[in-house]
Image (cartoon, rainbow, N blue to C red; front, top):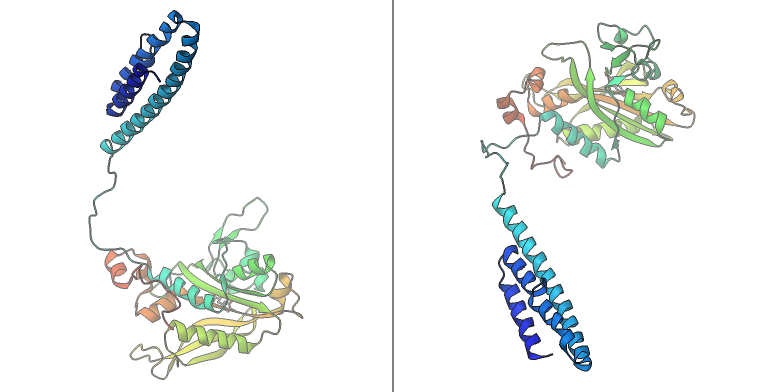
Length: 356
Ligand code: DAH
C-alpha cells in the first residue's frame, strides 16, 4: 500500500481509539468518509491517473475504504454501549426501603404444623391433595354417607352460600376436609395415599372453637388394607410428631358416617401438668376409621376389591398441644408479640431430620 494510504489508515485508527464520545467519533467519520473527507478526496483524484496506475490505486483505495468503514462502525457501537452503561449507572435509582427493624419475621405455627405433618406423612409415601373451601353439599356430606337429617347439616353448624346457578342446591363453606377424599377418589385410581391439610368452617366461636380453623385429612386406599395399617400409621405419626417414641396411643370405638368401624384416637398425657406422654389421663386428638363401603361405591370404587382407612385431625389442636399454646383465638389475632413468641424461624424448616 502506498505510504500516504498507510498514513491515512494509521491516523484514522489512532484517532478512533482516542475518541471519547460520539461527537468526536462523528468528526472522524465525516473527516474520512464524508463528502469532503480525506478518503473521498483520494478517490476523486483517481480519474486523473493513467489507466494502469488507476487500477492498482483504485483497488487499494477500495480495500482501505472497506477497512475503515468497518473500524468506524465498530468503534461507533462501542462508544454507544459505553454511553449507555454510563447512563445506566449514573441514573440508577434505589427503590428499596431501608430496613426499619433488625427483627426477622417468623413462620406461623399453623403453617409450621402443616409443614411438619406433610414431612412426616410424606416420608410414609403420602402426597398432598387439595379441594375448594366452597364445596357442594354432595362432596361435603352426601357422598360421605351423611344422611339428610344429620345434625351437622343444620344451619346452626354450617355456613350456607347461595347456589352457583338457579335451581341448584346452596353450597357450603366446607365443615371438614373429608370432601377432599371424595374429590381424590373421583379423579384418581387406587392405590391412593393422600393427606389434605386446609381451612374448614363452622358456626362456632369460643376459647376452643373458631368459625374458621384447619384440619388435616388422610386417606389410604389399596388392596388388603386392614385396621392394623390404620393403627400402625397413626401411632407412628403421633410418636414422630410429638417426638415421643413411647407415647401411649389408644383407639376408642366411635361413630362417623363415612367410616365403619370408626375410632377416636387418644394420647396419654397428664391433665394436671399438661405433659404429653406423662401421667395417666387420655386426650382425644383425632378421628379415624375404615372407609365405609358405601363411600367407596359413591366414588365408583369397587368395595369388594379395594379397602382403605381415613383419618382427620384439627391442626390448631395439635399445634396447641405440642407448643403449649393455651388459647385457640390467638392464632388469628395477628398480635406481633404472639407471633414472635410462637413463630418459627424460616431457617429451621420441618425437614425429616427434625422430630425423629
Ligand atoms: N371429618 C371429621 C371431623 O370433622 C374427622 C374425621 C374422622 C375424618 C374420621 C376422617 C375420619 O377421615 O375417618 O370431625
